[in-house]
Amino acid sequence: AQSVTQLGSHVSVSEGALVLLRCNYSSSVPPYLFWYVQYPNQGLQLLLKYTTGATLVKGINGFEAEFKKSETSFHLTKPSAHMSDAAEYFCAATREYGNKLVFGAGTILRVKS
Amino acid sequence: KAGVTQTPRYLIKTRGQQVTLSCSPISGHRSVSWYQQTPGQGLQFLFEYFSETQRNKGNFPGRFSGRQFSNSRSEMNVSTLELGDSALYLCASSLGDRGNYEQYFGPGTRLTVT
Image (cartoon, rainbow over all chains, first blue to last red):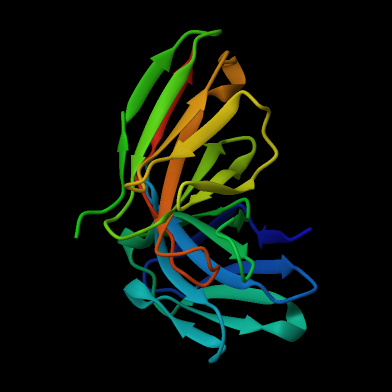
């Protein structure tokens, strides 16, 4: 069965520092991969997605992620953290057909001033 | 274009009661999926509907059911509520049923069972 693992339930960075949130997937066939962000008391907002093609994917708010098949990873990065980036981030995967998203457990990002 | 809307936003129910939650997808979207979010279990897939047909179902008891109407609006129903059903219920809409389509989430319905 497909699974998604996020390493680190909490990550703390200083404002202006690099953000790195880790995601690994477990699937015999590379799935489609997504990163979502959730602010308190809100739904999920799509940051970026990887389906096919270029393995470095750019998303909104300066985030990007790189799909590495050899490492079964899809880590999320942002060069310089902003206070407004503080939120919970979810990595998710789905297959070619169907919209069933399998989510990781989430990583809460804290940004220190 | 209006986003995904969910009603009601907050709900308090008593054990044993039943509840119906509603989701209106983005105009033109034909797929609606439902998820349950709890602190202990995280985000879990409930079911997916496409063109009024249930395409996929998660590992939830039969007390959880859903349907989709011809205008793509969807409802989910939980009967005989248990304390453990307290959660944020999220719906997501998508243009189609291919996994590479983006899914857009609504703000959720916060259900509290007492």
